[in-house]
Amino acid sequence: METAVFNATLPSTSPFCSLSYSSSSVKRAIFPLRRSYGGKNGILQNSSIRGGSVGVSRMMTVSASVIPVVDSRTWKFGARVPTIVDVDLGDRSYPIYIGSGLLNESDLLQRHVDGNRVLVVTNTTVAPLYLEKVTEALTSGNSKIDVESVILPDGEKYKNMETLMKVFDKAIESRFDRRCTFVALGGGVIGDMCGFAASAFLRGVKFIQIPTTLMSQVDSSVGGKTGINHPLGKNLLGAFYQPQCVLVDTDTLNTLPDRELSSGISEVVKYGLIRDPEFFEWQEKNMQAMLSRDPSALAYAIKRSCENKAEVVSLDEKESGLRATLNLGHTFGHAIENGIGYGQWLHGEAVSAGMIMANDMAYRHGWIDDTIVKRSFDILKQANLPTSPPDVMTIEMFKATMAVDKKVADGLLRLILLKGSLGNCVFTGDYDRKILDETLNFFCER
Ligand SMILES: NC(=O)c1ccc[n+]([C@@H]2O[C@H](COP(=O)([O-])OP(=O)(O)OC[C@H]3O[C@@H](n4cnc5c(N)ncnc54)[C@H](O)[C@@H]3O)[C@@H](O)[C@H]2O)c1
Ligand SMILES: [Zn+2]
Image 1 (tube, rainbow, N blue to C red):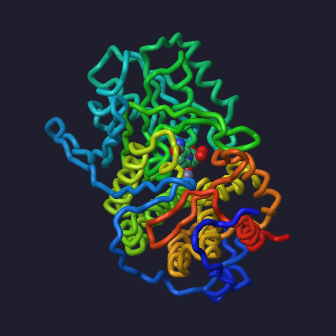
Image 2 (spheres, rainbow, N blue to C red; image 1 turned 45 degrees about the horizontal axis):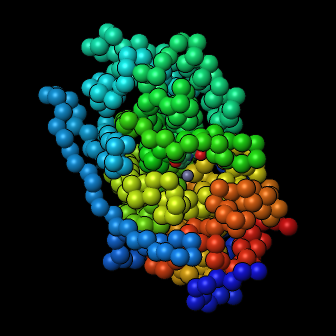
Image 3 (cartoon, protein in one colour; image 1 turned 90 degrees about the horizontal axis):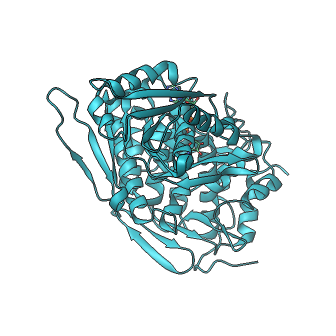
């Protein structure tokens, strides 16, 4: 068994036990929660740290700070002025436009279209809501543009090779050539699939992201990770492929179900935990505003999340270290998604329980103090997210999926664990295997 290289004092109990843990469980409609503890609301703490430092693997330490990259550029007279976050990747750089009513701004979209042929990839839920509007934005004042669409079945369980083939079928049957543009209109499932299809069709055509869930607006549409699931694991097939632009119309969130909104908030919380303590404190004060869809609170959360993601991606596009930290809680989360069947729990729900498990592990190593554990628990609970894995998950189910995790290198599973004060984490294989077992034991029925 390998031992952590850090000077860690092992706590004898989990913080979940020490903070008036109640085994009676708070059962809620959606999540079969097994464990929870009754504590007061988060202890607010001021932190002077901006950004975070991350220990990568065993060798190097990368530091990054949050640099606001937002700038407002004026648009044609009478048009809405979007907030713009730039993703700086040299000749593959692109803007993220964020604002209300941006789907009405045809210029924004048309300036990023390559060629005259566009394939909108969407699904059966989003098409009736926004396909007409997007088609209008793409063609308004430009009669040369031909828009085709392919409407896929809705759901994570369709994020597979068979569904992906429908995109290729449509593009090939419609005789698209290399000068065309794919447009992803929908949540993360559509964005990941459309991006992967664009990366592979004729060895690569341009594509645009129009994310319509909070999850996709704060995370999946930015950074160029595209792909599909394999029956043995999530997102195992894919490509790094950057879009021409990301267009976030915050009005699309008005039709999003509450549960999906909370799922997106899970990733927002993640940014605060791994690298932006001020943002985390802002979230603690503004969670209710986000949940009640206050437009300015959501716009701020999206902007700040995109700034964080854009910065990480521009420093480490292909995930050699720093970018992996965006996967806090995801190793456990993917095991949950895979273990109970894709689509049973939403991605953000699984990540929420995964972050709680990762924090439990970090605490057992002595790497974080109990206030961070408690504040994370409180904020996720307040966001109506699960704070433990579903009852059906066993240690074996976790281990089976963790063995094929993309973060396994040379047979060693590396994890993202918080370490130090709020906003700091490590991506490491140097953790105590026994402690991983303790955490799995704690959260799983045996
Ligand atoms: N590429 C990345 O970097 C990255 C990052 C995070 C997550 N992801 C992936 O993203 C996926 C999860 O994304 P998601 O949470 O957006 O799920 P999703 O794409 O399944 O969308 C959630 C649901 O909301 C519906 N929907 C979308 N927009 C809507 C709207 N405006 N109004 C009403 N309903 C709407 C969808 O049809 C779907 O039923 C997962 O597959 C995950 O692996 C990828
Ligand atoms: Zn995620």
